[in-house]
Length: 88
Image (tube, rainbow, N blue to C red; front, top):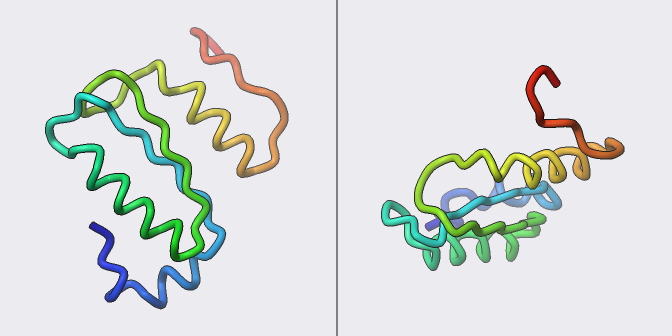
């Protein structure tokens, strides 16, 4: 839950700020629906929210790197996508 009543000023200052949320569909630590509600609150406050789900559980997954790379490049106006291979 986003405590929007406490963060009102901070959320107003963050209007338009890009947020990428990555969530596993089988995450037992943090269910998806509370995450969606929190992101809905951020979006209602004017933040630019993007939710990407994956079939895994809780934790980082290397197959998420292309989505993270694309998000960072889009937010910063960078061209293309970086090679994520060894030595790159």
